Amino acid sequence: MSEVPSQRRRQNPNRLAESSSSSSQKDDLAFQNEIIVRSVFASMKWDVQALCQLSSVNRRLRALAKRLLWKEMCIHRAPRIIASLMDGAPNGRIGGEWDAMAKLLFFCCGCNSTRHFQMGRSYPGHFVKSSRFSKTSGRSFLVKRCRTDLLYVSDPCEHQIRDRGDDLGIFRGVFGGFTRSKTRACLITKQLEGEEGVRCPFCGGRVWSMTAARLVPRSAARRLGTLENGLEYFVCVNGHLHGSCWLVPLSSDEDGTDKDVDGDENGDEDDGYRRNQIVEPT
Image (cartoon, rainbow, N blue to C red; front, side):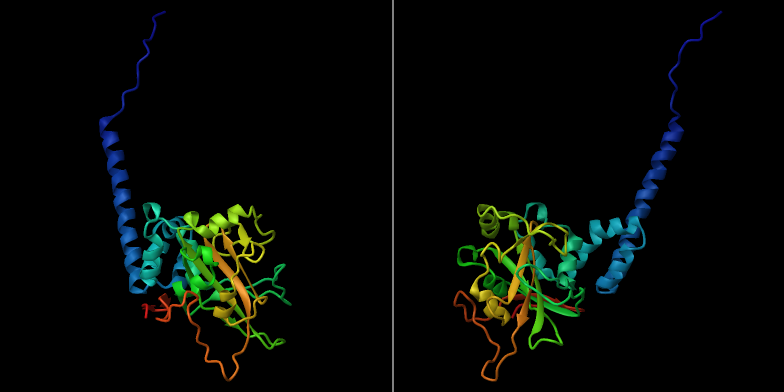
């Protein structure tokens, strides 16, 4: 019986060329589709609710939004905040993902009772029509030894509570370069455990209670217009801040103005956005 010599199967060069050409065409088509999608959202002024709807269609569009569109939206809608947060950041990355950053900018996270802030019931989150973030306000939320940290904090979103004389204020913020911040160093030095039962409403990360860490300065209550024991806020491992307070109504002899905690009387350095308009610093 004759032996059949083993032969290595030769690949057809024409088939390889066709496969390579097909793959290249798919890549070109995907690239063109991305350009089209970006152009559509640019014409819509990067409407956040429309982008949420796109992300919920299927996995492919959700991946595109997560990889590209959320970042583009944040840069377009809040350019000064994002430029400041990205300044000096490794590879231009910020803490957490871009979809979490977008949610922080455009979504009031609601409020639930915590061990230091008791409420009768929970209040759900919602999209906001306008919001203002301020570095000056951010300094009011930092203890003296941490005031070189970069922190943006929003004005509180006001919610009327029928059975109370005070309104509920819900605020949020974000640190720049949180991993290198003095605030994070203080939290680590205190060996504080993450707050049980509370997660960051923007990225889902574990959080520290600034009340439990004794890192809530009196200037935070003055900035918000509340009593010192009438607020609580948390900071997550990615540098996202969220909190709640009771807003005390202003009396007739109060004009609602507040000087900076560092004695700066030149006004706030504000970076923010409105629904279809970027609010530049004043």
